[in-house]
Amino acid sequence: MTTVFPVGSVAHTLMQLRGTWHDSVELFNLDGSPLIDDTQAGSGTPGLSPFDNIVYIDFDGLNFKITNVHFRGRPALAKTFTGKLVDGLLVFDPMGPGSYENVGMSGGPGILTFTARQLNQATNVYMEPDFIIVTAPGHRTRHTVLYRNGQATRTLTAKGVRLSPSCTKRHELDPRGLVGDVHEAQFQASIWQHLV
Image 1 (spheres, rainbow, N blue to C red):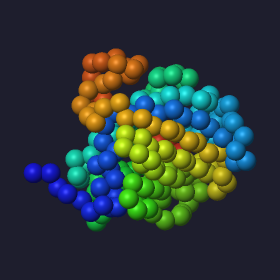
Image 2: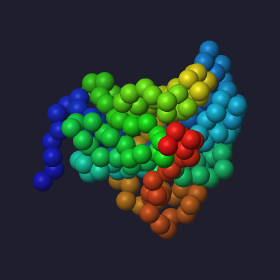
Image 3: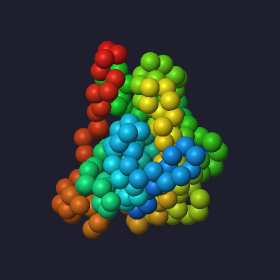
């Protein structure tokens, strides 16, 4: 039997986001002018803009996995992030030694924010809050602000269209090919290692 979550809860919105998505992604300077490359901005995955991702979002009511795969505009690359629902919040698994605790919280029906639970030395090194809004059935917008060394450096906006309500198999646009798990091992960064 499927668990029914209250409308507006983190879990309810995560259930709406399950599936395979095509994200069209653009980068911007803080003033809104287009940013062609975010390498100098200190992006965790730097490169050219615009670009496109296949995004696989899995949520079973407790366990969460999301994998972003570049398939156009940047070299093929897949990154997976995982977490669990704890006391109504999505608590992400650590992103690397010394990283901050990243949590998913609700802004009301169809709105999520993925960001640090608290500001600390790790967030001063790198932080990129994600603001996700379900704009219509099968459509969502994801907006991020990148902070490096305590300073905002660039924004990112992804407009997503759901290709399938399921993500049990790789999509034909996936540059990794059709064979294999949609998710990779949990991504681990070393940028906070000096804080350990």
